[in-house]
Image (tube, rainbow, N blue to C red; front, side, top):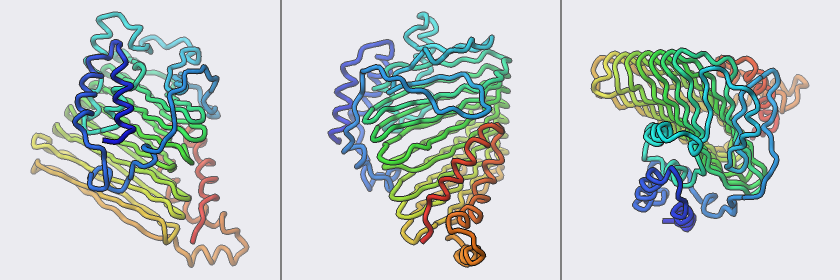
Length: 419
């Protein structure tokens, strides 16, 4: 066990609040967990040295930070500052049928329900999910009543100061037939360390539109997860946009717990310098007639490294499942690295499934052609590569978010060197 994990366990042992039973469970599992090494399959290409050498600390001083504005987007702002929920930024009157509350402020019956639901969707195999179980200061509970369609998205922002450590946790529950959009993003200043996990329970015939923007770069260490439980005829559409940092790791789990559930996951990552981004996506088809479409695309430049592990598990009772996984990657440097591992594990015999992965290099002849026509190297890169990612941006249901992220990605392309 590492010194960092030993310190985290010691700090968690000193906390006594309404989450104590779940914290005790997490601490028991952590005490018997091995610190990941190169021999640990789930962390084989993602060394944890940035965590071990991190000097980030939990900061107690009050800091005024606000999320970056997104043009043409009106949202219900749910903001954490250095790991602490800031209720002052939840300024809007909530729509009828929507509840947002800290777990410690719930009455005993609702608190018991929240405690029973805590960490039931996120699998126990996620080491840093257990760390988050143990160190989260509280849990923000978001509930949408049956049949309620929420017009404005809920934006969950985790804001970190220089050298701050934070561990944030949110539970989102959609009642039957409800509709909701949720945006997750982390904004970090300088060296920091955060774990940010959200669990979603999507009831029968409900629809969740989900976004996660992991755009922190530099010396930040960001480890988190988005975890989904889909019931009968539930639908979700998730979009992930990520850059790299010293260590950026995201785990997403989708559980088809009901029949005719439908999941769409589109993810894109753009890495430069010596950055690292690791995406582990697992889909559990536990019931029949479910569908999954998963498209993941990455562009990696300089000495950056990308890791993608996509696993689709078709259980024995999940007959008539349709699932497809596609990972496409573009290398912009001879020294860039991509480790991709798509997996299909099938135990049902009446299914339609496919998976694939490709890794290619930028077309240097096309790049040279454009340069000889007076187009700068940076603009030529954008012209050649933007369509590769823009195809997934076009699939974002929220036009304001798509238009907001497009110039950010163009600027990112312009900074990436081709060798």
